[in-house]
Structure formats: C-alpha cells, structure tokens
Amino acid sequence: MRRFIYPPLGIALTLALWHWLCVEFKLPTAALPTPYQVLVAGVERWDLLVSEGWVTMKETLYGFGLALALGIPIAVAVSNSQILHLMFSPLLIALQSVPKVALAPILLVWLGTGIESKLAIAWLVAFFPIVVDTSAGLQSTPRELLELARSLRASRWQVFSKVQFPAALPFVVTGAKVAVTLAVIGAVIGEFIGSSEGLGYLLLSATSQINTPLAFAALFALAGLGIVAYFLVVVAEWLLSPWLPHSTERNS
Amino acid sequence: MSFGQLMNVRRVFEGRRGWRAAGAPLVAIDDATLSFEQGELVSLLGPSGCGKTTLLRIIAGLIPKSAGSVRIRGEEVDGPHPDFGFVFQSPNLMPWRNVLDNVLFPMEILGRRDAPARERALELLRMVGLEGFHGARPHQLSGGMQQRAALCRALIHEPALLLMDEPFGALDELTRMEMNDLLLQIRERTHATVVFVTHSIAEAVYLSDQVLVFSRRPARIAERLVIDLAYPRSAQTRFTPRFAELSQAASRALGVLH
Image 1 (cartoon, rainbow over the protein chains, first blue to last red):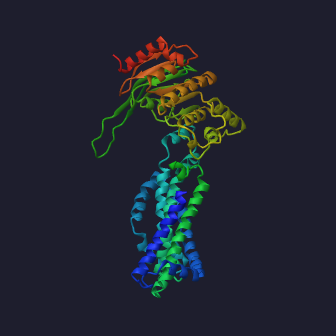
Image 2 (cartoon, each protein chain N blue to C red; image 1 turned 180 degrees about the vertical axis):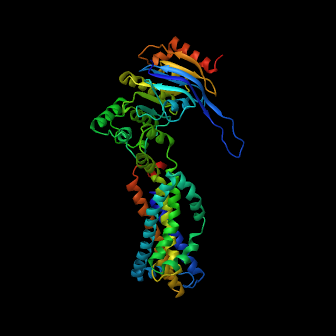
C-alpha cells in the first residue's frame, strides 16, 4: 500500500508548495504561473501540445532508431575485428568527448530547418551510448561460455549469434535507455536552434510572447514525452529479454 | 595402450615483452606424465594456482602446450575436440535459455538437435533430479541445481572424456557431498572417463580411481595415489580406515601433514 500512497502525496505536497510560493509572494504570472494556471493553459491548448509533441516524438524516435540501426552493427564490427578495433576505437572515444550539441548549428546549415537536422542531432547524441555499451557487452562474454563453444568447434557465426550477442543484450538495453532520453534532448536542441514546429519551438515562441503558463505546459508535455519514450524501451526490454529478473524481483 | 596418456607435458607462459622490464617466463606445468584407462576417474589435486587447471585446459586442447605430448585414445590432442564434455567451477548456464535449451546447447552447435536428443536431455535431467525443471530459467534454480544442469549439458553429446574443473568448489559442504554421490551414480551408469580438478582432499579420495597430487608452482606431480576403495562408495566409505589412510597420504604429499 505504501508505494501507492506516498508518491502521489509527495507530488501533491510539491504542487502545494509551488502554489503557496506564487500566492504568498504575489509572483507575476509571467515569471512563475501557479500550477492551476499551467493546467488551464495546457487544457486550452491541448491540440497544440499534441500536434507539436507528435513532431518532437517523431524526431526523437527516428533519431533513436537510426542510432540503434547504425550503432549496433558498428559495435559488432569493432568488437569482432582486431584491425577495426585498433583503427576506430580511439576515434570513437575522441568523438564521444566532443560536445555533440555544439555541432547542432553546423548540422542545421547542412540539413536545413526541417525534420532532417533534428533527426541528425537526436541520432548523434543517442549513437555513442549505444556503441559504447554494446561493445562493452560484446567484450564481456563469460570466458567459460566462449571456451564451451570453442570446445564444440562452433563457427564464428554460431558463437556470435548463440553466445556473444544474447549475452550482450542487457548491455544494449542499458545503452538504449540512456540513448533514448538523450535523443529527446537532441531533438529539442535542434528545435531551439532552428525550427517552426515541435515542443521546443512551442516553448521558445510561448516565452517570447510572455505566455509563461503555456511554456510550462510545453515543459510538462516534454517530460511526459521523455517518460513515454523511455517506457517504450522498457517494454522492448521485456519482449526481447524476458529472462532478466525484473528489478523488483531482484530486490526481494 | 592407455586411454589417455600425457608425456612430459610442459607449459611456460612467456614474460611480458614491453617497455617495462620483461618478466621472467613462468613455468605453469613442468614435466607432467600420467596415464589413465577408459572408465577411470583421475583427480588432479593441488593447491590453488598450482597449474592443474592449465593442465586440464591443455588436455581439452583449449590452450597449446610448450612441450610434451597429450594423447587421448592414441590420438595427439592439438586443438579443441567436440568429443569432450566440460564442467566449470561456476555453472555458466545461459540466462536467456531455459534449462532444457541449455542442456541441448552442445547438440545445437553440433547440428544434432533432434527428437532423440531432446529425449536424452530429459532423461539426463531426470537422472540428476531435475525432472520437471526443464522449462525453468537458470536464475530460478539454486547453485547446486544449476550445476546439475551444467552436468547434463556436459553429458548430452555422450563425450568420450569428461573434463571437470573444480565443479563443486563453489558449493556448500552438504551440496558438495550430494553432488559427489551424484557423480558416482553418473559414472556407474555412463561409464564416463573423467579428469577431475579439485583442491579438496576428501573429494579427490572419495571420487577417484587415481589421484595425482601436484606440488606448488611450478606444478610437478609429487605423488600418484591409487585409490582402491571398493565400489559402490557411500557416506560410510568416508569413515573407513582405508579412507583415512589415503587422505593422510594425500595430505603428506601436499605438504600439509608432516
């Protein structure tokens, strides 16, 4: 029961404190609207939040999907070939330390203000955690399992498909969880820098019109979107690796 | 001609060559000579890190030897051989497969996963007391049960030689004794030839037909003990005078008893 009572209570308390701050110090709506004003703004412009949210969601998921589609094969190639590993691992690590967001203006110049540039930024920030975690997973296969396969004279493909890759899957999922939240950030940054749609754009235009309640509503929509994207990955985890004990089961 | 014959096997790990001072070459195994017959269980007994696992991996063909010869059924071992079964210290079941699929893994690699293989897997699971657990995931089993499943996986392709690397070392005392009895039963039924690495004197004496006692590094065979305890062995065997005598001899060879 506790876990159903206390979390909503915590949220209610925080909202109450927020409301009290606004009323007690007579904060102007333009600076900090009350939770109720945000709710009203959100309900009134519901259509706008959904349509812009959908744009941001598409940018996020396309970018994330592309990061998976390219990141996993690259990690596989780098972990299975000594030469590729020596050639490209240092480069990947060096690239990882570049603040990817700093590339956003350049990508905008290359790809224009349409969905392509947002997708590219979302892809760029999501790509590295997937590559890094997937290759870490592929390189941490238990030695005994590899020896077992080797003692049976398994082919390289058998070793990869039956041992290495399934063993790495939990790592891939961990990387994907980090990547999908980063992809949301990437998409919003892209919208900030140059766009005419999406929640990031809505947030910017609402603040420039001093419509702070709507800006806050967009912020909450963005948080909701991040949570939905994250749970899509969690659902995929359940479907792909049902053998993993769930976190609640592990704790008990 | 013995079933398995090792002659003057030696394994040296080269020191690291680099900008740091090159380490001296490490002699892991020095001049190991031994032989065993079909159906025999031979234990390699020695202190931790004495190189007995290295010797087992050489017999398996997983790592090369520096000198000497290893012959199984008259054939020189110069690489991995699918006719051997493996049991490791930890069960190493694949968490993404259920128990039955884990047991069938070798058959899958060998391209022989068919209905008879499945029957045999279920029969093996029955023999080790895991009947009804074939659909369970490894994490749902206790450590001892996981090791039983790993034993089935090692036996599924009916290997000529079973190689066991401290298979019960991570189990508690009671489970370990249970597993020892299980291994004796399995041998009685399958007549498997086993090379068994352990650092437990009691386990080595209880299970084996011959015990090879290794000295500290570089590992040399300090003593060869023929275990003439009668079969079938049971808990009673552990309290016979002959068992005590053999344990004493093994302890003396290990240098823990003077």
